[in-house]
Amino acid sequence: MPVYTAPVRDTRFVLDQVIGLDRYANLPGFENATPDTVEAVLTEGGRFVAEVLFPLNQTGDREGCTRNADGTVTTPTGFKDAYRQFVEAGWPTLSGPTEYGGQGLPHVVMTAFEEFLCSANMAFQMYPGLTAGATAAILAKGSDAQKALYVPKMVSGEWGGTMNLTEPQCGTDLGLIKTKAEPQPDGSYRITGTKIFISAGEHDLTDNIIHLVLAKVTGAPDNVKGISLFIVPKVLVNDDGSLGERNAVTCGSIEHKMGIHGNSTCVMNYDGATGFLVGEENKGLAAMFIMMNAARLGVGLQGLGIGEVAYQNAVAYAGDRRQGRALTGPAEPEQKADTLFVHPDVRRMLMEAKAMTEGLRALCLWGALLVDLTHKAPTPEEREQADALVSLLTPVIKGFGTDMGYRIATDAQQVYGGHGYIAEWGMEQYVRDARIAMIYEGTNGVQAMDLVGRKLPAKGGAAIQAFFAMVGEEIAAAKGGPQAPLAESLEATLGELQGATIWLMQNGFANPNHAGAGAVPYMHLMGIVVLGLMWLRMGVAAQRQLDTGEGDRAFLEAKLTTARFFADRIAPRALSLRRELEGGADALMALPPAAFAAAA
Image (cartoon, rainbow, N blue to C red; front, side):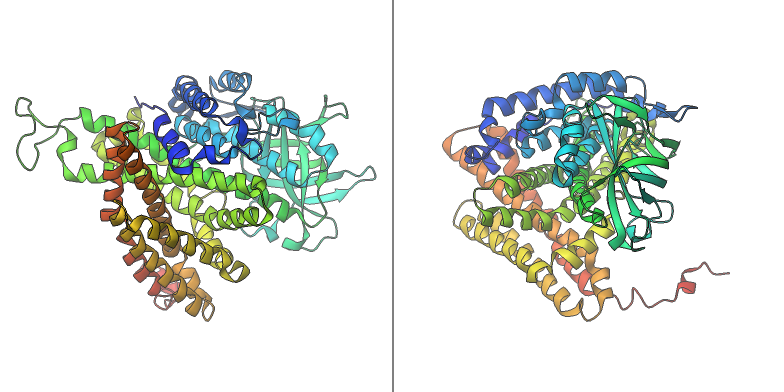
């Protein structure tokens, strides 16, 4: 059976020593994020997910969700009661606005807790996760009346939320959607169409589900410029907030899928359902992107969460399983065999997993802090800088983070050997669950193209240049200290990224296929640089604590060793990624489609 313990100590190290949460105590919401409060959230949150949600992960995967004859959906045994406990304990309200019943804590604190949720039970986490994204979109673009009517019960967790984009004939290319919205005399709209792959589209956890649906108003342009966003409640809400009639929206079927079986991924049918416009007509895509960007950061966190729990189990197995002897001679002569830990290749997989998960944790928490700063930094300039930086990092966190999460899961499965392929050990579920994170909310290839095609050239490349300058300053500051080797390693990888950026600028505009062919290598190269920055920060922070005699010495020394491993074994991949990128698109695009077919 799998095991899981929330990484509270490592999370606290990042929040306290690397990010320095106390430095932001003067900002709105941060004054409540005292060390005692954060400790309580992480400790109690870790206990809750381990005791209540983690035991439901395997059983939920085996049982899955059930569509009933009336179109309703029943979640796996135990999910409904666990969700009741989740709401009663107030977990959904952590970072919700205080004016709508939330606790108003910083997003970075909620993100730390959400990692634990993802590790313990990713399928369960998606229910409140989708609600939080829908809430953010309504808060950003909804009317005051819509906010007052829907947001309080979404913040509390009493009602759920979804995002409805994809249709059978279109995924990323949303200009192809066919769902129609017909204006009604009372100001509402009749929504008709079919949406697929809708996570948490129908379930029994909440009394109501507030669907956010993309559709085209009658007569609107039949492309992306004609997309509008609508609130379509599962149950219509009366003016006083009470529930009214059932709306004409139903679950047509539950998708049969590879993983996340505990989450109800639905085909949703809108048969003249009553909907309400969010924002302006034909400007729905911009509104939905608020939710999508939040979701992409959340999916990156899922990559980390699955990687962490898979890594923990691989470590436990490697410590228990005895196979063969150490290459240098028996490590434990009194035993018939040594543990897997003596084998360098097993160590390779475990060290890579440790370096990646701890680096990704620092990156996800830093990204969450930047989200906070886009809204709460003291000056417009600081808010704009934070927004530009998190926009640049979002495709990296989502794309690189989930690619690495899947790799960690498969390596952890590999540590188990044949047992990793057997369902009872739980590792194959982590591989299956991790796989979807590379696909939804925009496939990782799309994330890479977003990075190269939109984020790099935005405002004349201001964001990437600011990023280069920031990394350069931190390298210079560390070069004179004991972590100079980490700084020098990062300087080398930064040079590869800068060189790759120049190559794309010179060649990508002349031939867009060069940009498309190099996008994924570029995203991975940037991921290595960003994680190198995280490890430099963690190395400096660990050394500072060691020098002052603070903290757990063994923990801090392990940090420095892992940082050195990243610099020695992972950072050098930057060179090959740049070479791959500069290989261009000529050979990649040369074969005619017929040449890909199998020989007759």
